[in-house]
Length: 343
Image (cartoon, rainbow, N blue to C red):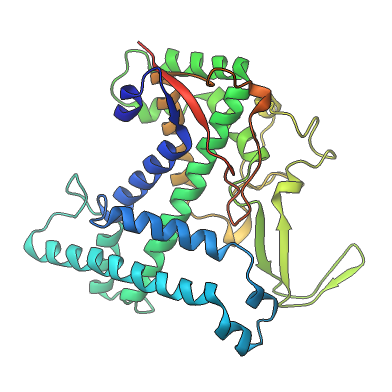
């Protein structure tokens, strides 16, 4: 927030600011604070995610060892994994030393962070299956990637849609500013009850689901629309298309938060499973509560503390809405805005 205030009246790259904020929040939740090699860690994670979600010819011939061995992408991903391992090893080792030296957790506030919890559970040995350092590193990496890219992308898309629809922006800001005015404490409880902001977020998730395609495998044989899906077959679920299906959504291409106003539609799909921004079933996103809280609180602060307009000469209808190709459907081009502190 301070960096935005310092940029008052100037054009800022909001996409970069949002990603930096989300990564910082996730680091503090998982590691207790920003990692020592933070810039290298962020770059490695972003590059690895981009490469893993891009086209790779070796994936077309998974049984060919020769093509796999010649793949530059796979070799580079292995190198990145080693580099990430070194950084995460240092994080875990530092946590171990801190736990030996004092009884407090490693977070900035003295409580346990995610690494502390894993180390404590590992030491207690009460799980039915043992966990080792590699297990901890794998989960930490997944938590960081899932907690950063998806939240940042959702916030970025929501701000983009609000800038394209000034009347919605004004209504959301009015709600937030009325609710938070004069309330310096217990803001989390207030944010959880911002009804219109929740509608705005739902509509942004409908048009721009964080993970547009879900990849699953059939546990048993099924018949669907005359087609047989064998057990073990890989299945791709097109969430993006489902969220724009005119059979279930009126004016599906339009941004209308009010469409959710008189619906009891939650985040598990409804009767027709036509709204699945977090997936569904056993493999539904386990971070839904954390992710929504992060998105709601960040947006409430952005809307409460600042006024937002597009740079001179840029019209709302001219904003590039192209999505990036990859596991997460972030904006292809960064969002630039002019920010002015409110009050």
